[in-house]
Amino acid sequence: MIRVQTADFDPGAELEQLRRQNRGRAGAVVSFTGLVRDLNDGEKITQMTLEHYPGMTEQVLADLEREAQARWELTATLIIHRFGPLTPDDHIVFVAAASAHRKQAFLACEYLIDTLKTRAPFWKKETTPDGERWVSAAMEEESGPTG
Amino acid sequence: MIRLRFFASLRETLGVADEQLELPEGIGDVAALTRWLRDRGGVWKHALAERQLHVAVNQVLATPDTGIRDGDEVAWFPPVTGG
Image 1 (cartoon, rainbow over the protein chains, first blue to last red):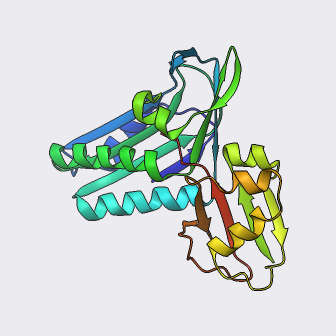
Image 2 (tube, each protein chain N blue to C red; image 1 turned 45 degrees about the horizontal axis):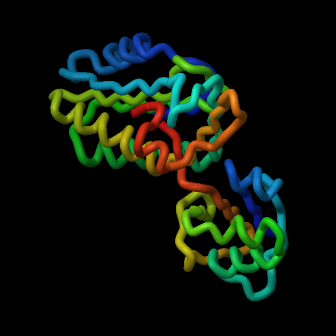
């Protein structure tokens, strides 16, 4: 399932929901939660605004889910990504994969977040004490806000 | 008509997010349309020459030789930084 939203989400509640949906079938749920850091590239971050390409975003995320489900035996996947203005410590992204076996769940979760970062049309703009700046892909590779 | 979309830093540089346009005569693919837009001069010439720009046609990632037809939506944007 895919959700692209401005509203916050509760990772604990999402995991509980996955557990209920997969009752008995999933032996493992692996998740990744991405947060806004208060420091990037040596600068203090006061706000981060995420822009995206509505329509294409959902299509890309659906593709990633299909790819993961084709590659591993998964009972469920979930991708939530926020957009709009966020502040340090806020949730940005949540990715989860449920499977009968932990190895499949780990691999699928890693695949989903890694491919999301290079393919989903989102762009981060940071506000620092010196003004605003767009986060570059190179900055993301070295010290991205979500690793 | 075709719909042009520009995102993130490119949108700010061009000062345009969204534009409707009659498909120009003789323009049939992404490379030709990008050249046509660069010929507007000014910020267009340099901003759209950026090697790292991505283009999507109808919300699917495209290449320079991807065809463009009437009714299409074409988007240009910098490398993505989500997640």
